[in-house]
Image (cartoon, rainbow, N blue to C red; front, side, top):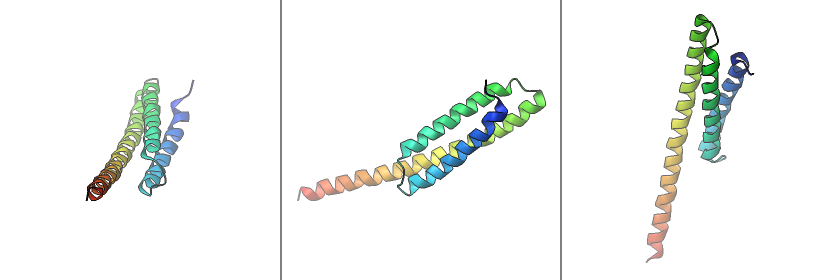
Length: 106
């Protein structure tokens, strides 16, 4: 079975990679769905870490709780930024299609 000590660095790397993917999404180098898949994986790992933290001593449990919360908040922030960017791009594409459709009717 995987330990929380083994999962934590992997989760931190996944959060870092997600931040990098957000940058790629914003530069139109990556589709937002790829970012959201990574964020879902991060969330799953953090859920697993929370359940594993119950096996730790109370002091250790509190420490892990804070670390998990920090990573979870980072993941939420990345997701919000990705969703915002995705909405902006989708809105721009929709407006462009509508504009092209109206111009073609002339």
